[in-house]
Length: 405
Image (cartoon, rainbow, N blue to C red; front, side, top):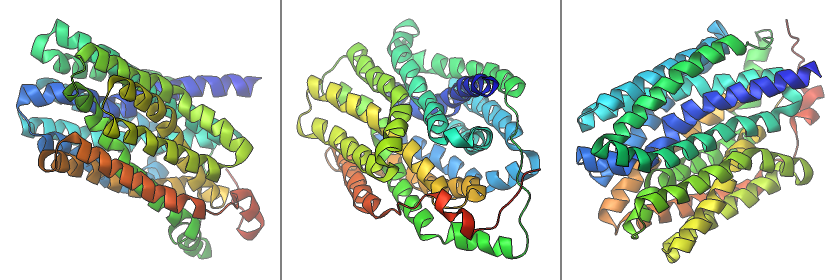
């Protein structure tokens, strides 16, 4: 009973953290981008590069965050993450140029890198038997953050005219500061496995970095990372360009946010019944269809169907890939594998918004960027059936045991 209570508390606080670092720090930009673009007189390519700059900051730091976590623990990095995020939001509140916005967005990316992987390490470390559920619940914070941004953006634009987006960044920064104090109070680092030396260090390269299953998961994660920030960055603008008013467009985007709240836990439960590989194939297919529908039929009903399907699948897609990365290898290597495949994911994110913006500017508008998203998901769908069905539990006897302190 005490363990369930602790798991519930950790799930709630972790969701609060991901609302800030993923919802506000990453997903909210797609909602605020049209207002920032008009206010700062940006091209689509510049707007896309702002999204890419966040991914660059994320990619640079995610390479180092594992080393930092091993020295300092995961909890301090989560606190640093939230404070960096708040700083980036405050810079964006005051930004009056593309260059200033770029600095703020890079800091958001750095803050996200500091926070997410250490947060996963905390919840998986404390609750290894519920990793699918905990990762799914953790990712629900991403959907909640998107929902909040979608609901508030049109109203803030009415209340503060052209400066509405600025005050939303200010609000996100303030919430991040408050969440920092809550996270520091509640979260604790799990027991740390003993460090590996000698032959075990050589085994790390063999069983993680060059493991065929891990590399395949990494390739799929990279393609999904390349794809998923494109609709997140441009879909709201696509709806507005189709003639839908701001309030209705915000409601449609909010619908996607609502669906994404349930996506991770639902697909985690489904994968427990039918297997993660089949579940992943289903989410990738449905995600591709959800983007294809509004390209072919840019109508109000299509936008609703698209956001419902996209919201219900893409968070589940991410949680399934993360769970698969930890299941390809021995349990002791799970955090290392997650951090490793995340590098590929971050690399994909770095390319997506910038290239999407370039295509939107030069090849017929936002629909060209959405076609790129569909193509990338199709490539991921081709690779997904090749994943190894063998779970990490089957590898227990083949790898050395690592005891906890």
